[in-house]
Image (cartoon, rainbow, N blue to C red; front, side, top):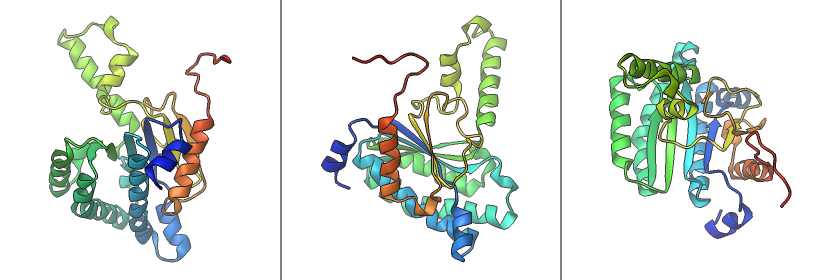
Length: 246
């Protein structure tokens, strides 16, 4: 994918893409290599989408890597996913840094192991000044958790008389969410055939264009990503209003 040719094909592009990378385990089972190997194979597709966003100058990408509900999976799979995250932080951060990718993490990071927390902190610090792409990884994240934390923060403001009840607004809530420094997603993609949000960015996706596909994440290649972007380009975003012909 060249910068000039693909940019010309997509005059209407999202500013922020959010993705649930679903289907890794099922893909591995179907291929006869097991769920754990399926998750490992899915990591390479992250590179595909990151490269696509950089080349198309899409400045924000958010990926749902591990939800707060994923702790309920079999212990072996959870441990494997944590090792995969740790290994990815070891192997991929330098390349991301060289490609001017700024890493950001959202979720209840304090519940992760101290080793992973240290690696996350180092990755964020190393890439903090990069400008090609803001790559946000949601780890131990849940939309309801995010909203609950937001409500608690606002309640403390009111309790400490730093804010009146009448000053609570949608804009204030957006600012106090863990994604407060990010624009709301324009395009949400979910692979793997499921058609639900699964507790991901519940507030933030209010006016996001939703794209669901049956392709499982390890098969979500450059062509599939471009198909999703083409679909987005054909959508008419009204935000509750009326679009009239010019």
